[in-house]
Length: 469
Image 1 (cartoon, rainbow, N blue to C red):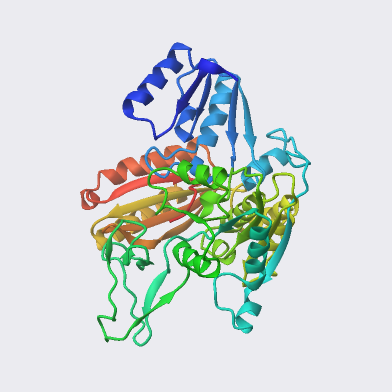
Image 2 (image 1 turned 135 degrees about the vertical axis):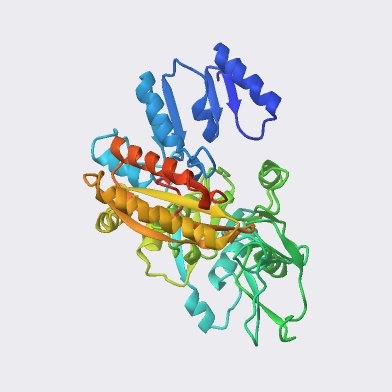
C-alpha cells in the first residue's frame, strides 16, 4: 500500500541494515514504520499515529536495561508530539481496559468477528474422567476423535501445549532424586530428540543416565512437553504429517514452518504459545488446548489474565475460513471461571471478576508495583544487600518521605533463586507513582551504590514489571 515509504525495525536485522533503516527514517524517507518493541524510539518528530497491536503482550515490557514499557513510551510520545495512540487487542490488559472505562482512554469496541463468521464452538474436557477411564495419554478420547474427523475432511488442526521438551523432569521412583541444573535452581527438562537433559534458563545439558546416581533405581518421566505429544501423535496417526513449533524447532525462524503448514496443508501443527496468536489459516477448523491448567497457577498476579488471553487467542485460530470451527480445552479444573469464560470468549465478564480481585488486593491499576532486584555470585552478600536496602527504605519512607503512599512488602528470594550461578533477591513495594517517590528511590540507589560491602551485587529497578521474580 505504501511502497518505499515503509521502514522496518526489528532485532533480526544486521547492524548495517538497522542503521540504514534508521537513516531512512531520520531523513523522512520512512514515513510508515513497522517494528517490534524498540521501534517506539524511531527518530521521527512529526508522528501522527502510533499503533500497538496485541497491546496485552508481555513482550512490550523490556526485561533488560533500559527496563521500559513500550506502551508507556508510546503514550508519552503521543502526548509530546500530538499523535493519536491506538491500542489494539481482543483481550486488552486489565490496566488498559480500566483506563478506557475510567475515561482516560477512548474505547472503541468491535462487536463482530473480522470475517463475519461465528466464533468456534468450544468443548471443555475433564481430564479427571479420562484418568478414571484408564486414559493416561496426552490426548483425550474426544480430542483424538475430533482430530480423526478433521483428517477425513482434509482439514487442519492446531494443538497448543505451552511447554517444550519431552518431560518436565525425571524422578527416581525410590529416593525421589531429580536431576537439577548445576548452575540454576531448576530441574532439568528431558528432551527425547537428542536424549539429553536440558536447562531452559542457561542452556546447560547433559546425557540422560539410565539409573539414578544416588540409589541405582530407574528414573520415571514426570510431566509432558511438546516432544512427547508429537511422539504420541505419530503413534496414533502414523501416516499423517505433523509439524512441531517451539523454541527447539524455530532456531532458523518460524516462517519456514508456518509456510509449510499453509502451502503443503500439513494436517497437524503442534506448538507452544507461538501457535496461539496472529495466525490466519482458513483451512484450520479444530484447535486443541492440551493442558489449560499449567497457565493458571503461578505466584504472579497476572496469571489468570495471561491464561484467559492465551486461551481466547488460540481458540480464535479455528474457523477463520468458510467452514465453522471448533475447539477443545483439556483441563483438570473444568469449573475454573477463567477457563469457562475463555471458552465463551466473554472478556467483559472476565474483566469484571478480575478488576474486583485487583482492587481487593491493591494490585495495578489501583497501585503501582516497584521491584528492586539484587543479583550477585555470593548468595549471602546478595541477601544482605536486599535486607540492608529494605531497612534503609523503610527508615527513609517513615521519616522525610512519610507523606508518600507506600506499602513495603519486604525482601525475599526470587522464585528461582539462582540462574547461571548468580543468586537473585528482590524487594517489592506497592506505591503511587509520583515525582516524590522517584526522587526518594533515586536518592536511595545513589547512597546504596556507595556502600562498598555490596560492590559485587548488581541492583536494578523495575516499575510495574511484567513478572515479579
